[in-house]
Amino acid sequence: MRVVILGCGRLGSRLAEQLAEAGHRIVILDWDQDAFKKMSPNFKGECLTGSGFLEENMQRAFEEKTDAFVAVTDKDNINIMLAQWAKNKFKVPRVIARIYDPIVAGAYRELGLETVCPTGMALEAILSMFKT
Image (cartoon, rainbow, N blue to C red; front, top):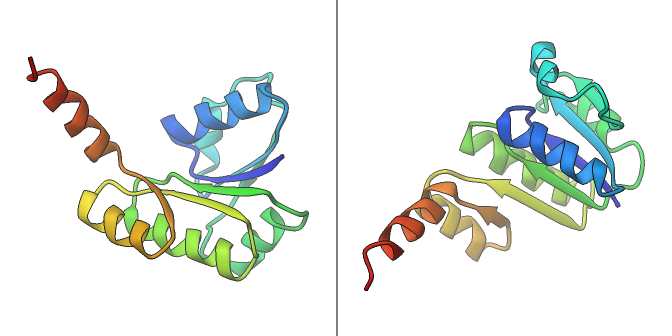
């Protein structure tokens, strides 16, 4: 499976490395060249420097058939916009966006965008610790 990941922070870098170790072909895109210092020297994927807002960068990322796109920057609006762009313009069949705001995550989930909400996940985990 070929996966494009937007954002090379703590989550994006670990996700890229683990998916690559599992045998997937990975392209990770981040606007900050220094972000790639988080990557293991053994990482077998492709690191692209540039903004996801520039069509030429997204064209490079999606130049081959892509099976999944995961947007995990630290900005909800960026993740939402580029996830929708990947889904609609580049016809990526599986698109996932990390969205911190649980209300926004729920709204986009209802519109058909796969979302992961760490705030909601943490809330559920903590509340479950209070159940007897």
